[in-house]
Amino acid sequence: MRPGTAKSKATVSTPLSRFDIQKIKADFPILNEKVNGNRLVYLDNAATSQKPRVVINAILEYYRKTNANIHRGLHKLAEDATRAYEATRTHTAAFIGGVESEEIVFTRGTTESINLVAYTWGEENIHEGDEIVITEMEHHANFVPWYVLAKKKKAVIRRIPITVCGHLDLNDIDNIINPRTKLVAVTHMSNVLGTINPVKELAAKAHARKALILADGAQAAPHMPVNVKDLDVDFYVFSSHKMLGPTGVGVLYGRRELLESMPPFNFGGEMIGEVSFDRVTWADIPHKFEGGTPNIADVVAYHAALSYLDEIGMDNIRRHEMELTEYAIEKLSRIEGIEIQGPQDIPNRGGAISFTDKDLHPHDISTFLDSRGIAIRAGHHCAQPLMRVIGKIATARASLYIYNDEADVDTLYNALVEMRRYFGL
Ligand code: PLP
Picture 1: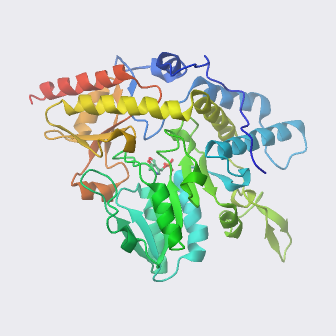
Picture 2: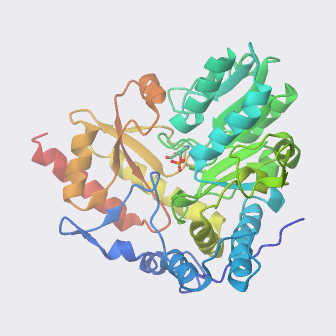
Picture 3: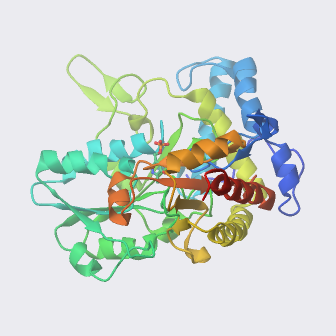
C-alpha cells in the first residue's frame, strides 16, 4: 500500500504563510516558564525538543476520548485507537519520502531501533571476519550495539575518520568499505559537531560492495527534509521526542524485503500469526516487530508533531536553522577564548553547535548559563570516542530548533561575555 499524506487534526494554532517565529514560540507553553528568574532560553534541542500545545493536547484527548488497546478489540474505542495509531504510521511513511507504511516499525526510540536491527538482522548476517563500518562521530547508540555484536561474532569494526574541520575523511573510503563489509552504520547528522554526512554517497559505496547501510537520523529527521528512497538507505532510524513529539516513540524504517527476512525481536502477544503448543508463526511486517501493547497514546500524539512540522514545512525549518546557525557561529566566534567545534560551512551542518572555552570547564559554562535561564548541554554527549578524536574531555553544546531566534542567540552571547567577566577572564 502506498501511503497518502494522512494528516492528524492537530495544526499550527495560527496558519503560517511564512516562518513566523513569534507565532511558533506561542505554540510552546513551556517557553513562557521562568528559569532562575529569567525567561527560559531553551538551547538543548539535540537532547530533546519541547512540545507544542497540539502535541500535549493530543495526549490528553487520546486518554479522554479514545483510550483502548489496539488491533484486537471489536468495539468502537478499540477501532478508533487502532485507526489513530496506524494513521501515525502512514504519516511517518509519507514524512520520510513516501515509503510503504508496512516498512515503518514503531520502537521506543532510536536506540531501540538500532538494537532491533543488531539483534535480528545482525545476529543472522554478521559472521566471523565480517566488517561493520562506523564513523568516528557516532553517538553511542550507533556504536555500542555494533561493538557488542562484533565482539560476540568475532567481526571487525572499521571506522571512517574525521578531518580537522569535522567532516568525514573519505580519502581511504574504498579500502574501509571493502568486500568484507556487511554493514555501514553512519549518523546522518552529528549530535556533537552538527556535520551532515554524505549518506547517499556512502549508500552507493556500501551497495557496490553488497553491504547494507543504516543511517541514524536522530538529529537529521527533526531538522531537514529526509527522503530515504533518494538516500537509498536500507535502514533509517529516529526518535519522536527530538522532533516535537512525546518520549518513548522511535521509528525504524527498513526496506520491505529486509524486514520480511528478519526474525522478530520481542516475542509475545500481537506479533504472532498462529500459536499452538507445537508451532508458532509470525505476523506480517510491521506487527511482527511490535510485540505486546505499544506506546499507543504517544504514537498517536506523535502524529500531531508530524502534522505540525509538515505545516511549517521541513524546507522552511532547514532554512530557518541554517540562517540561525550562521548567526550563532558568527556571534560566538567573536568571544575571545571560545572555540567552535565542527564544520563552519553552513550547507553541510545543522544547528548543534559545540564549543569550548579555553579557560573554563563545559560544566561550569552550563551552570553559569542555567543561572541566566539558558539551557544548554555540557559533557561528552554520548560520543566518548569522538571526544578522544577531537582531544576534548567534554564540550558545551547549544542546539537550535524552530522556536529559537536571534534574540535567543543574543541572550546566549551576552551571558557568555558576562560569564568570562564574572570569572575574571
Ligand atoms: N543518535 C543520535 C545522533 C542522537 O543524537 C541520539 C540522542 O541524542 C541517539 C542516537 C539516541 O536517541 P534516543 O535516546 O532517542 O534513543
